[in-house]
Image (cartoon, rainbow, N blue to C red):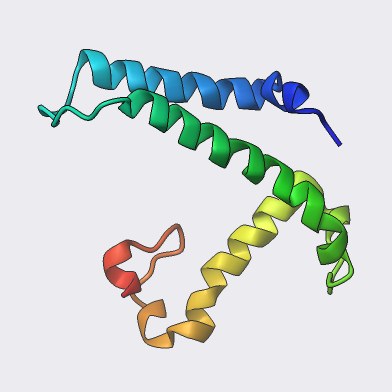
Length: 117
């Protein structure tokens, strides 16, 4: 189990933290509109981010042993690219079974949100 510091120093975690800092700085320098003054909003936002960040990092590590016993198919032999392609095909084929009337309106690349309703 990785330590909280190891998770924090992971390159993906650092990229997420940098994006968060960039967005907060962008909002401070170029606000979209004048917002009402709320005391301690930056501190509360940072605390909320940290409280969300660590549980969402550790939760998959805790529940993985329980979900592995429920696994129906082992598709680990497909690799990363094969798994992405299979997932993409699965998502696109849902229209054939869930909404056949809309399947003809969707092109082969992607469905727009206006066609999905």
